[in-house]
Length: 141
Image (cartoon, rainbow, N blue to C red):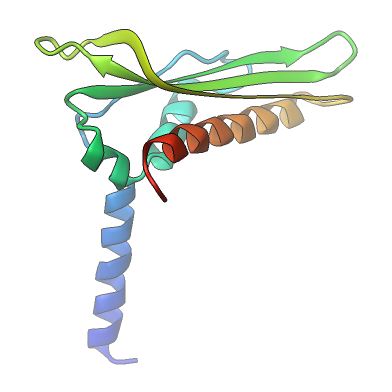
């Protein structure tokens, strides 16, 4: 490969990575149970799961996204998880989140005989599924 080709491939991969990240002023909030998923990881998953198409159609100055993962292990080691992602509006003047859900997706599951690590993995999978549900209702992928 020539250096020109390598440079082109490197620039292309950087452009694709940059287009996947949410805009810098995007409002992404999380209200998850820390035992299942920490807020930093949930917000990162939410930001990564929202394609650039969403931000082109729904301006980050007018809309934000909220994620919430709840649940845990029951007494008989059954992992029960519910994940929800909501697109909300922002107030026009202060850009504060306003609980007027525009789109909502919920994913839930129960897995018997689970460990804490398996329950955390299930929580991440359900959050990803809820993100995909909201995205599919907003834009064609």
